[in-house]
Length: 430
Image (cartoon, rainbow, N blue to C red; front, side, top):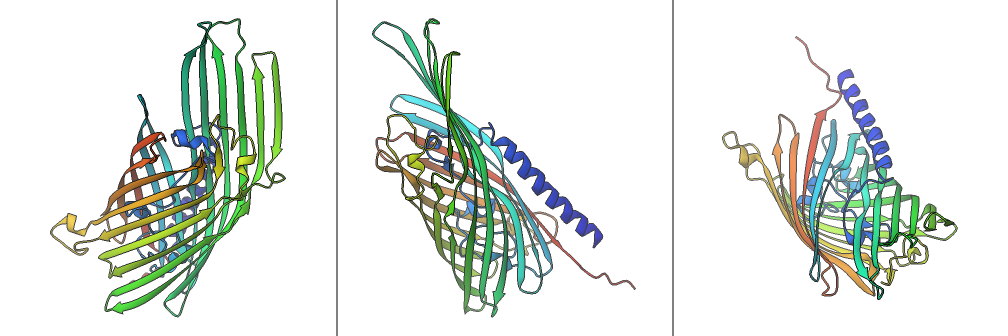
């Protein structure tokens, strides 16, 4: 027992230390890379573990005692009553960008979600974790010659991102209805810089930029209802709702003319009335024992009243018109295990997943949403005893579907470590 408690304290310490390192990374590390991350808080991260991502990102209506599901706090009660569970993920992405005859390529690799879950008392469970929310990363430059054959170089660079620490609790009633509540703390730093330099040193360079420090406190609620339809088969419906919340922190806008002139303007985000968008999610799933799962999810997030289009640092993006709007997602996924107890063939004990998604961005550029479409696949390899496993996932997608938009084709991969143990066993000695 003491060994298990010590291991739990180690896991909690890893979570706290990782949160500190992620806070430091937001000061200048490129956590993601996309020209679309110049808008608002950056490119939204697809929340979920490697298990969720292998099925297109579904999970609102999923109940599984082998994996932590961070998409719906109500799902925590689908677990063995004495189990301790942990999940840690790593992810990477390779992206190819194309606009006309211009092309670019970039790769990133980062720590992803970290989550820990354990029971509190009968029919209840608790979860704590950390996950990225949005990524800012871009480095765009081009040269031109004016009428006097003077070379000018235009450069814009952005770094940083936002993260979320969460703690949730859930309970089951009448063996079918599960409800959960989650506390969220969002934090992050973003740095954006634009400048013009000249080939002739007699001209002064012009640099402007924004430094954003943001945080927000919000809550998320979830429920799931599981209905048996045959022996070992279930239909589950689920729903989540994340409250809109005030965005706090500050935005510092500065402008420099060579080394001779500098001016700064500071905006209090709370006084400016900035808000995070709310989010409603619904899902339905069909499960047959622990061998088959199919699910469809829909989410809607309203950022229309965020006021990000009125504050420098979120909206000053050159000649294009940036606006906040309603984001939507449609996701579907399937999971299949041929024979979990096969003693001859290891691959039959593995779990296989496929999925697809369509996302509509929470912002518009020149009046049009920046949408993305992708397909996913994944698998979990059982490791040692219990439900320990190594999960891997692949993702192929495209962002910027409109003809006039920059095309971003990407390939992503993720690796998740699923840790499972039984607590508080009373040993019998003879």
